[in-house]
Length: 351
Image (cartoon, rainbow, N blue to C red; front, side, top):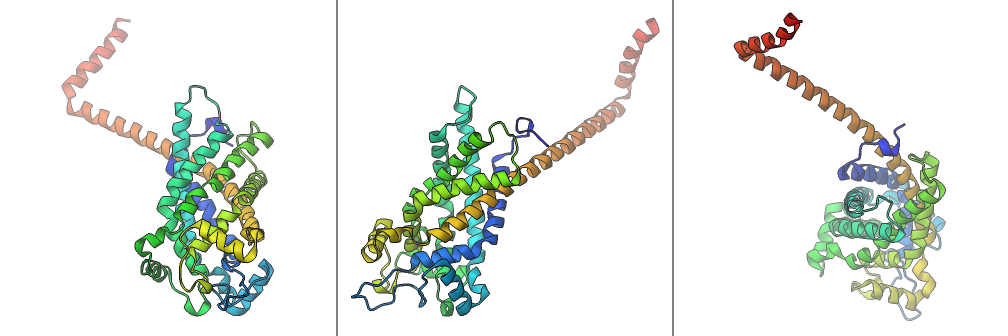
């Protein structure tokens, strides 16, 4: 097994590809939990004076299990995978961008340090936040479209492109694709806390270990994600509310800010409603993050071995090309070659 110190450093795109691959596989496995937590988070209870439905769908879910049962009964098993294509595109693009920029900013930070030592917790969180902010700017449109798809009623299901057109044709126009950007930029603290905690927990529990076993990577990823989710759940709920269709009680009027969403929820359901859907959110987060980091560690090792093999092939080709070039040069200049050989043989004759 390659030791971490002996590894060929992966380029930013190599780390990004490893992270994106792990994220896609992990999210595909637990996608039904994503549907459930989104449906739970967008429903808002009625006030006694409200006559409209409390949610964008007709069904009301009392728990994650209840949501799964009702979705399957109403839409079939495929209902648990509504919007899967868009979600995986979003997951791949977001994680590729995140891991790419995280590697870039972390490398720049380490190269600027006079003392060669790992970043402290504050630095790790800051680096993660910068990388997350850059990634969100480029990838949030897919997140907006996916959230819309996940909350569409069964008789109004649309494709990824049609949902995108619906967003653009709304009163927000093209800016609607970046709805919830402010909340998303605030939420960069979630992956920042996650990966910052992952690094610190790794140093605490597995100090000096160049490579981790799959279950160790899963444990660190799951624990760090649970901590981050609890800390940021109210913002996650507000972001979902911003990106989904407004509740019927608002008569089509979209929310303008995540603070408005939070105020609306608290007025109707109380402060604890800001943590609704936290059970499937944490379960999904633990499984996804655990599987992601477990897969990413394996993918990184695979890419390191692949890059080492490619580098050895390149070196062999360069040596062969240099040898061929030297042979051709000697053949093209026979007189000079003869002089060179004669000069080389003189010491042997004199000896």
